[in-house]
Length: 406
Image (cartoon, rainbow, N blue to C red):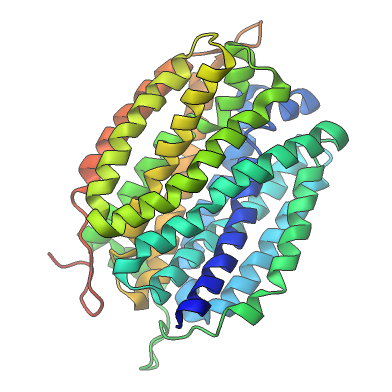
């Protein structure tokens, strides 16, 4: 694929990722509003967040059976349409129960969508270019934080928490119309010898027989457990414990996202230049500092609060870039879609487990402050250290070689 077409494709994938990521991250700053609107506890709010991730995990295993059977373009259209429908349903949810159902629908399609995007990157870009490509696509998180979250919060402040989801669905609909024009048919990953797709049981057995793929899945799982034991409760903690005005929450995402807009592509380029494993270790170890500082932060002045939260954004999200480039390169193209779907399923289940367990540990007292959040941060740091050890066991697989070999 020519360089110009590659860049156009990356732009499309980044834009799709923007809507997909914004749909997920907007739930975090909306936490205080949802807790008040539905009269729910932090643990029930954690259930709303984790319903998306658990659904994405469960349907991710279904995607492992389906994704490598079809043209990538057709699969992207179908999954993105389902995601749009689920997001629109979130915007019209009249109760917390209805919102959970809508999040399950959005998560089911969104989880497979994420795996498919990284499968396309793996199919189009050589291993030496995947760090850069992954960094560009994942910079969608930065744009979602800098532009999407502040605008979404302003819309929610003025017209209600429903509106951001409706706007996301409208924007995503416009992007869906451009998929067929920008993305070419992609069928090179489909077996040319007439073999059908493996059954779910066979896929699971094949992955279990591949130590390399198991380590890659384990790395994905650990990173999101570490992240999402803290992330869903940041907004509530900053407002209720640290004393940040709720109307200033957008600054956290504006500053943090603005910083990662520059650091995410840089980390991707450094990963290609100096090695993905080496860069991952450096960024992951650096992430431990804000992971420990944020949940123990006292009532500091606003500039100090924003320094800590910005460092959290930079390093916690930055470690995912070299990690995903490693994970994408841990198998071959003919099995990449199914493998990444399983890996994404494990990732989403890890998100749900992290949010749910943290929600069970964290207690909100009569003043609204969160207790035991610091303990969750300590566990998150330990899990990060474990992820560094696991990353050392993953090797890059050259095309034509099986992922399970040593």
